[in-house]
Length: 324
Image 1 (cartoon, rainbow, N blue to C red):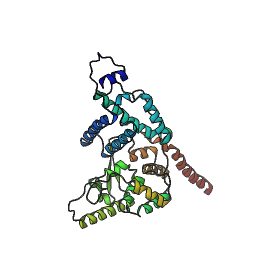
Image 2: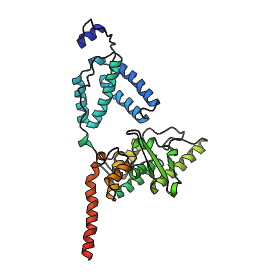
Image 3: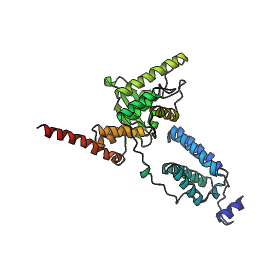
Image 4: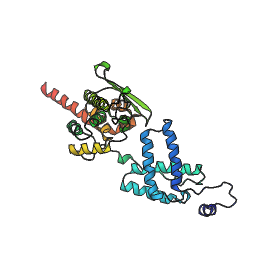
């Protein structure tokens, strides 16, 4: 095996470092141990940990049985290009991130001498940014559709948190009851923690969001009491036994189908929040603070909507001049 590796890598017998001919899958198992440790100490979220494991399983379908040092830069480049064409640049970049971690782990384990991803570059994601958002009548239709089906108790508050507070999927699933004060100032207060940029934001609860959250809490308490669970649950979105929800993609897709809304991702509800915020009169700076963006550049994508808001003001000015 060592001779085979020397022939493949061009090393000489005088090389003092002793290599280990490990397969792609063997290195992946060791990398998963690192992810588990980083998750336990809070360095990566449950969601990120889960997505890493799913993504490395997908990569193993192509490279799993190969010796790691035999995987070439050209092979990886071709694989990533195909992923970008078939799916999206964003998907290809997610794969590249896992490839890089795996190759670095391979070097650490002496299964690899040189990182084949070192010259690979990320694909541009700018033109793949989604600007899909819902208008108020579509929001109402979606909330009504979410109130039907098996997820009719927990899906409406998830949708409301997205469209009325710009909450991401991660912010929703990591939300705890201790983060919500329903009685603050007779309106309620909610705190979101975004691990993506380590930012926190606190907002007054919107009336509709407050109502559906209270409805969900009452239903959850009723079901747990019926099942004879006595202690309070920690996470807002959890199963009857208190286990936190990991995903709700299928329930959301079914609600969109019932509402007749196509090509909508849950993350588009953040765009819906920002877009309608600006259309209702907020500035880009207001939107930046309320959505939790790290810098105004991330909010600039909504700048074209400020022109539409200004047109409403100009119409009012025109009507004022006409009346005088």
